[in-house]
Structure formats: structure tokens, C-alpha cells
Image (cartoon, rainbow, N blue to C red; front, side, top):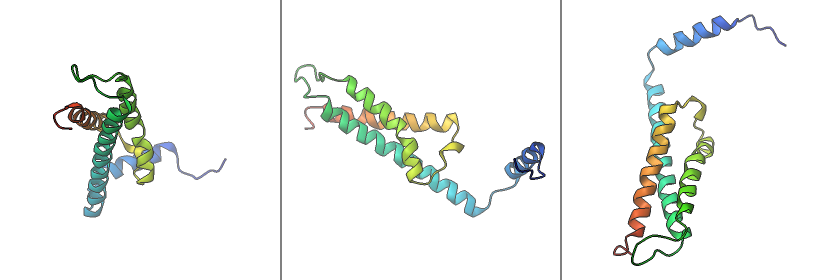
Length: 127
């Protein structure tokens, strides 16, 4: 155990001071780029999950438009949301700093693009 001479309360005070100081232009730009990367990741994962849901769930019934194994689509949606964490590691985005609100946004964007993609592909007049 190494003694650094810094107590826990000193770390808390330093963190509070860091939060209250104004961010520089460069810090704002890095944060903005990371938000754009996260949004693009969520959209890409939604489109990918929607496409895979259509192609892996079987041929849609011409009358009802339903697929035989539609539950596979829900599993692919869940996988698309979960795998974003690993894509963030590849993109060098610190996923540990994301709050519940950020993860909700990521999940919603993935859900929305998954639903739109799968719906468009299930529309027989488009194919």
C-alpha cells in the first residue's frame, strides 16, 4: 500500500473544482466529436440489427407480412444495444463517464433505427 499524502476528501474537492471551471474550446470540441461518434454508432447498430432481423427471421408471409421467427429480431436489437459498449472501446470513447440518460439515448436511437429499417424491409412493395 503506497501512501500518496492525498486524502479522499482532497480528491473530492479537486473533482468539484474541476467541474466548476469553464471548459476550453478544445475540450468542448472533443466532447462534441465523442457525442457525434456515439450517435453514429447507435444509428449504425440500429440499421445493422434491423437488416439482420429481416434476413435472419425468415421469409415474410405475403398475406400477414409477419415472419416465422420474429423473436430473433428482438434478440438482435438487444445485442445491438449491448455491443455498443465494445464499439466505444474500439473508438476510444470513455463509456464509464456515460450516465443513465446517455445510455437511454443510445438504446432509443438504436431501437428507432432498428424499427424503421425492419419495417421498411418488411414492406413488400418496397422490395
